[in-house]
Image (cartoon, rainbow, N blue to C red; front, top):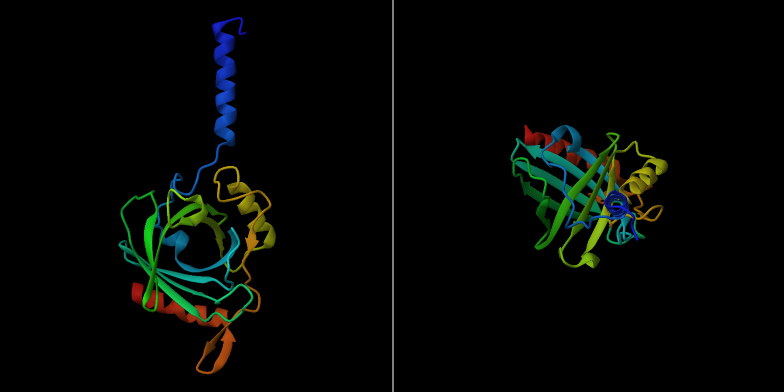
Length: 213
């Protein structure tokens, strides 16, 4: 037993600090970065890692802004994780709420189909990596995934560091455990020809900039 009230309080405080340090947040519990930051987020991103692993590859996002009111996102990816042909095209138009840190329920449109996912941006790392999470059901952790987006100058070590820094804070990330999203040798088809995906993505990024202007 504790010999004094002060000793007891010190023990309780120490245990509370340990628990606070080891407790991670689910995607539903975590706060998001404010999406309304064109300096950080506009332009082209590659999805380079996901946990659980992605079932597609060659995921590229081109992000543009309509003033301070909307984020426009064009997404391309392959139809499976063994294909390098980025032949799936999706889009989203996110209406911003000033200063929001709750994330957004995003409608992802592919042709006649729409998928609804809640997305949060958790950490912006070294001007190169963007750590986030998504879920379709806030009370079902199996519907949630963590992801890491990166600029074109990313490195494998940078991806690992971003993942491991997020692991103690967010339950969607585990130290040294994540699925790499293939980006090498991805390509897209254009008018019967195959062209590098970086070229197609450049056109999409230009289109978003023109819309923004």
